[in-house]
Length: 71
Image 1 (cartoon, rainbow, N blue to C red):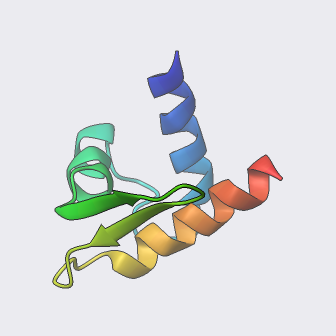
Image 2: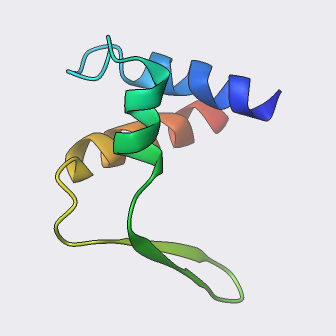
Image 3: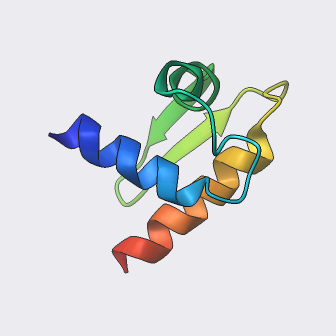
């Protein structure tokens, strides 16, 4: 159920981008399978993406839209 919700939210967040018509396998490869590092502190969770990640701006856009939807 959580995976289905994530896909629906991704599709909504990507409506006006080049990723809007991609199949779920392509979205998974380009947005969810990212080389990076997760750092957890007492109060925060940090995601450090690889500097060579080509779709960083799309990832940030989706992240901001998902945050806005939860508030």
